[in-house]
Length: 134
Image (cartoon, rainbow, N blue to C red; front, side, top):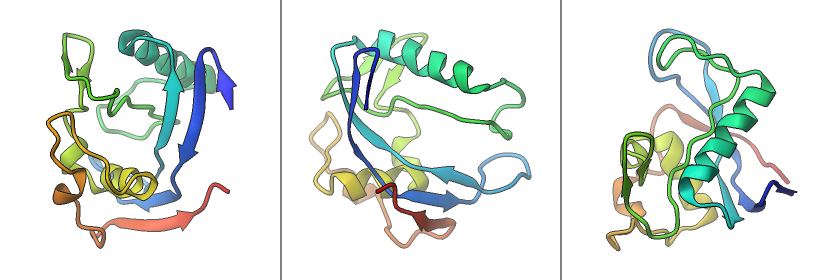
């Protein structure tokens, strides 16, 4: 798939995960590896536009939502500004992010060169295989 300068290279399986935040139904999570010529800030703006086009409405923090697209990593860059932090600040604390990330790239490293796998328990409770995107 190619859209607005974004080409999807790989997509993980879909994982059903316990919701983080207020009581609510379980979430479905997946990650995608993309290729883009967009700078990170423009890519984030594009992801937010995709969310709006799907009908995302901002309500309660960590509450139910139609879709949530996060920019987790951007090459080996470290970015910290008021609108964007790369790597995503919660990346190593969220099994529902780590498990699908390591599915598509088991050797993935943080910009520091540290393997992402050191932060992940593949048998983490609350993360269940839901299905493949094939």
